[in-house]
Amino acid sequence: MHITSSTAAIVTGGASGLGLATARALAALGAKVTIFDRNEQAGEDAAREIGGLFACVDVTSDDSVAEGFAKARAAHGQERILVNCAGIVAGARTVGRDKATGAPRAHRLADFQRVIDINLVGTFRCIVGSAAGMVTLDPIDADGQRGVIVNTASIAAQDGQIGQAAYAASKAGVAGLTLPVARDLMSEGIRVNTILPGICETPMMKDLPEATVAALAANVPFPKRLGRAEDYAQAALFLIQHDYMNGECIRMDGAIRMGPR
Ligand SMILES: NC(=O)c1ccc[n+]([C@@H]2O[C@H](COP(=O)([O-])OP(=O)(O)OC[C@H]3O[C@@H](n4cnc5c(N)ncnc54)[C@H](O)[C@@H]3O)[C@@H](O)[C@H]2O)c1
Image (cartoon, rainbow, N blue to C red; front, side, top):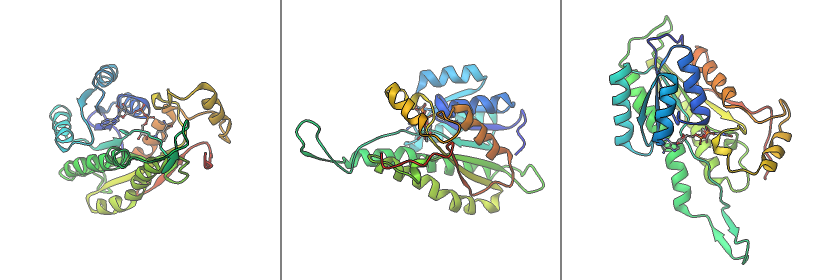
């Protein structure tokens, strides 16, 4: 899709990390960007920086997401681009051991459910809400294209590590829905693709010790560094702009393959 100054775009999780870099890249191309995020302060700051709009949205809430779409569309018109970046990372073993006592510790089901709710159901909720609006648009090219959606899974969808049952399941769900949703929307001229990022340097990683980050970077075949948010934004723009990319899940990971830990 060709991005112009009349193209409206929504980026969920756009207040930070991969979403923020994508919001900046879209705005730099002239798009009218609305950031959906639950972090109000960071979202307002980001929107101001890129000359866009912020909507305080929690992707786990039907009402909140509907209000976000209404606010974005009132200001910018119906979006043709949706990038889903809102998500959380979480770690717990299926059954672990308490470090001090050695007692078994079972994964809390509520924790599993929460990761699925945000990363998987939240992504699908935004896809449904956005596509329901996109279908009302006139096609903009000879192919009959109306809109494009980019989702964010993770290489954990394929190489889930110890402690990643919930996270990997949520991301495998996002990868898994990509083709069927692209097929559901093919007759409406809406493309759907998903990026599986490797390990990227974002605020999500800020709690990791420096030595752990260095060890992670050393394991990347090439380039020997963590991914940058701008690398992700470049991949998202590619999928948005390349009209023959559809129903695809692409890894963006410097060729890393994760082991069990
Ligand atoms: N950073 C990585 O290495 C990496 C790797 C693979 C996949 N990912 C995925 O990329 C996406 C973006 O991650 P990031 O590294 O930029 O993280 P980040 O923490 O910097 O940004 C995530 C944003 O999502 C927002 N968010 C979280 N829950 C939300 C909710 N319920 N409603 C609305 N907004 C919500 C947060 O407020 C935050 O601004 C996530 O889905 C993450 O799982 C990240």
